[in-house]
Length: 513
Image (cartoon, rainbow, N blue to C red; front, side, top):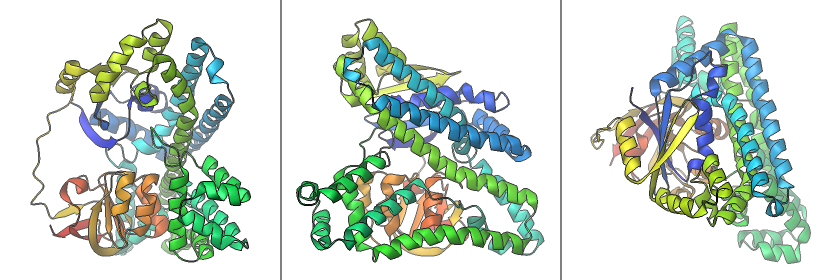
């Protein structure tokens, strides 16, 4: 079966993504009753990343894992424990690397760090694939299972019209996401500043993005702000960075200052997690929800949190590894970005066999266009004409579909509600500025970079994602209507279109183009 493209994004390179494919095409079989994904293909052209998978074996692997989770609570407990334990081990390794004097290491020792990191990341990725593969890599298997079973139950008690609202509540995590954890810490910072007798001056400096002035005049607050930057530097990093900057932090702080009373903003977040637990318990009691349905909702809420948690672990580990990759790049005469077009084996060959010049030429070609094919835990990277041949051999020809006449899209409800607004396509952090209060945010899949825009939007619409996706998490936290998994929203909807989002029924209508 030919590979099928799953998503395309900016700012993902060969490293560190290829390590995920090593596990998906081999190691995951150890936790999925022998199932694994047959193969994958990554194409990177002018910094645009396109990811394709063999959907048939993704489905087999996902359903094997999902059925095991549903039928065996011990496996569910083990999966949770392994993800948290391996996450701790990966971060402990990163903290150890942070203290090493990389400059004075031999090439061999530098490579040993890279190798050991890859081993830790592979172990974490193997188990960490679970929430992603069962709900959002190609299909939302977990969401579909819950909606089918829950829909049948509600129909049996004559309340099928409540499915969107009930489903959204029961599938919501009771634990703060990484984004909300950072915001609470940020609001606490502002509350400390507001209590200071010089608060007016400090806040003006924050509004003016004057970090150096704060350093000179108010070193105490410069230190507190700097500590926040350090603690949450990884949050906007994604796969290649950069880390959170002073400018980025000040933008977030200024957004809070424009959004009303700081104390009220914090209390709203805190109350959300207090209330959600009580509301869920009351609804379960009211519906007399059967134990089997309670259990699969438990799976969904736990993996909603874990999906966010493990993404944070990955990003923190990428930040820890950046100095290592930078040192390797320096020794090879490459930039940090360029060295991320090489695999571990290629880096080792370049360093140990005096082949830096050869790989510099390879990287120059890969920056224009390259691809890699992964199968059975091995990848081969191609560039130039060879890359085109590989794409033709493995990737099914996709007919160019004309979406111009399409006026309605169907997806899944993450949070109910019905709103109308102007659509804004938001794919990258630079698109955030386009979004004004009341707009409809349309994205392939949201991420923490987009949180400022998401807080302004009246609704979210995404191409991909299921119950455990970032958009689902944020929509419940912000109580913003959200329709997920429309497949084609970013191709059908354009900036400026008037759009109606009926998240009660999972329908998005384009009212005028």
